[in-house]
Length: 172
Image (tube, rainbow, N blue to C red; front, side, top):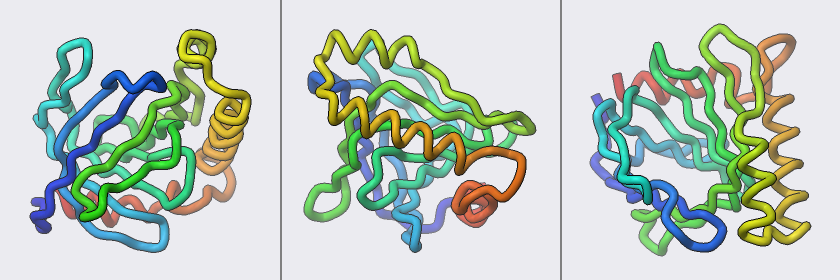
């Protein structure tokens, strides 16, 4: 069960400002990796295509000053799903999170190997929305770092190895 009661509106946009996804999460806490948000299974996510209901409970890590967010799902959802995005920004009281989705996703399915999704969408939107070279470079750098940090073999980098399990335990 989620124990903290601070609600956060997660507002994700496309580069042109149009809505990508929006939902309400619960602020679980903060550690050296960033702010952790929890979302229960069945939460409605609105989008420009109408929306959906979350199929799994999950926690989302919002790091400080990085070009990504990371989502960790309960079984049977993906173990790790990272969105490459602009640096997340909070409103003054920490109740609204804004970021711009840059389409690239780094995913580690449960029991599988890390891989990149939506490279075609990134290429298409880079042209359609006119991503500046600096944004494209930051997105690619973040994607490459996440691929290395989230790999299954060898020494994974925290919080992708085990730290997220504590936060997942707060929403079960």
